Image: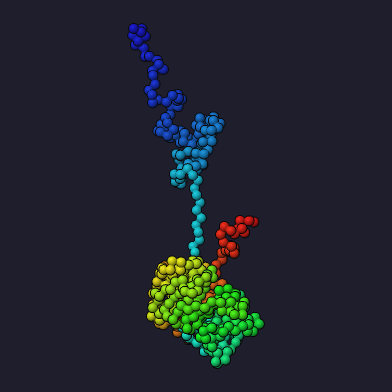
Length: 442
């Protein structure tokens, strides 16, 4: 037995084995932990929280550990060196994500659109003929409005000047239709004696007279391009005239049993829509005119209003007069009616907004109003009431912002309805498809 033990001496403590959870680093401090300090001296405890430890200085650690601490301070601690410290200011909450915060730009609120409830201008239109088989108002591409008042045609432009273009004889009157050519220089005028006369408004001279083959007066005129003029007569016949040749009638067909009171070509120039007093809406293909491509008989009254959609080539809108009161939308490719809306009054005219998905309609009794609709929901955006009688005639300005309307209350009103788009659109190429070399070669 060890003599020292017997003599009652205490063994050396350095020989004891350390427990596994004990720190291997010897401590030289006798005043407790820096986060759980000895409560005898609080000044020392505060100094321990704010004064860096010797082993925390960056000059005593490896470069990789220093870089890690710097990254940690930027991402998690946001530049702070310590998590716990004595401070009277509240700390901002830490972002749980290691990714830097993403700055979101708040879009400014869209300016609420203002639609004036009254017309911008009102002009007196005496002796205007109110007939649902006539189309005597048109706004040309040169920003000139043409309107027929009985036996005369007048031109009105934005500067307020009015010019009388022509007055026909009593046997040739009244004027049944007017329609500008796409160039805005020539105008076609339909007369009651079945003649269609072309005028040059720059020289104020007559260019040519087209004799109607059927002998009936023309109530509807539509241009396909600068050379092809289409006419619809009161007997239901339709003729396509080529103005470049002497024998101008190149195609004649009949798909209506009554007067053609609505006529319009599609933007591509391949399809023609014709509405008649026989309650029929026909779609014609320019390549085959012997019979209509589609015949729709869903309306229960005369189809006067027809309008091709500018943003969907195969979409057509039509409106029924008198007791029908409906706006119908047609898929021309499929030959189906995709939507029908009861407006509550007869539909006299339809115009699409060139910039937005909106449709404008003019109406007869009892409302005698102009209504703006949101497509395709067909929720009503605005109602413009200024006429006291049926708004039979309506035409749109070249920029698409303004609309002219005429009624048998003997007034012509100009409305500022649409807003002009400020976005610059890239010009469209004349060639479409993979064969368009100009879209690939620069």
